[in-house]
Image 1 (tube, one colour):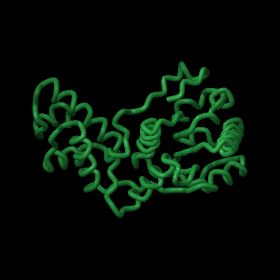
Image 2 (cartoon, one colour):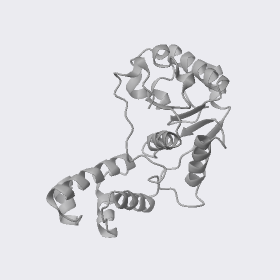
Image 3 (tube, one colour):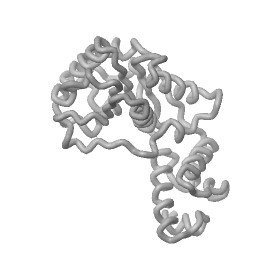
Image 4 (cartoon, one colour):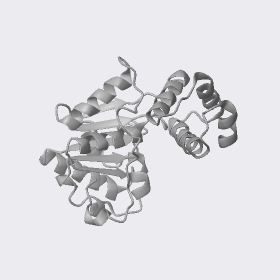
Length: 237
């Protein structure tokens, strides 16, 4: 990511597993259309400003970070900002120079909604990015019309580009997504073991993938396959 002087101490890092390839979106589904829109935003053939919204655990953070990874692969400069973690900072200081960045990603927008200083700073950032021909990707739990904003001009700006709702996965699709992620890690996750995990852990995909990472580390350390007894022991479920 771009190392802006005022951001050197923030410790904002991208998850290496957050890629477009790792996002489970079967062909001809709504989420596949979202994925295509994001790919086109990155390669410059699509909309420069995209607003994503959806329920917690639907994969918003994954998609924003995946867009950053893809943009970096294409030689573009990026900046990912998780607003929930950065809400205690002065927005004008955080946003200095961002108009020179090819792709800016603002995650967790509701964390700063209703705060006039943040809303004005995001509004001004939007305008600067537009003037410089750059890209902006925003994520929130709600659509722009439902956000608790005080600056209506910002709400209007957020609706100028494309707005996509990211759909949550069914339990069957979560199982397939978990198995896809396991294969990417070189793990064999059978249907029985995957179903066991899905049935006993929170349905949040972020939680499921985090627990898979734990299993990966334990499997490597103990040289064990992912069986139900092994999963039960490692995850205490």
